[in-house]
Image (cartoon, rainbow, N blue to C red; front, top):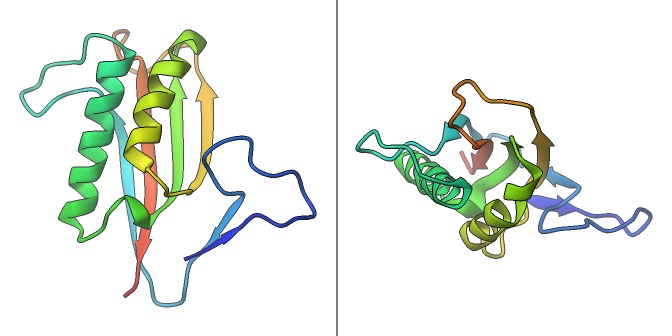
Amino acid sequence: MRLSNPPTIAPPVGAYSHGVEIPPNARWLHVSGQVGIAPDGTLGEDAAEQSQIIWDNIQAILADAGMGIENLVKVTAFLTDPDDLPAYGTVRSAALGQARPCSTLIYVPALVKPDWKVEVDVVAAAAG
């Protein structure tokens, strides 16, 4: 993967890249929106706990495909409350470490279930 943050535009305002180039013949993994439901079926109590469950689930899905956080190309996060951004951001930063995938964060009025506060979908790629 090659990160693209050209000096002719403003640098990213956070821990992401403006673009990510994937080499030919890469394997792609598209991960459906993950919500804060733990393996035992319980929902995290707040945005921080839901976010932790989400990123744990994403890491498990990546591992199942023989990939890791370093293979993330794109992250899209949906939050229902702007006040939850610090909690989500803390968990996201810990999960990503030094990885800098492309990222989008969107505030939405609601997710499918009223108790869901955060949803995240990702795209990853690895050498074929």
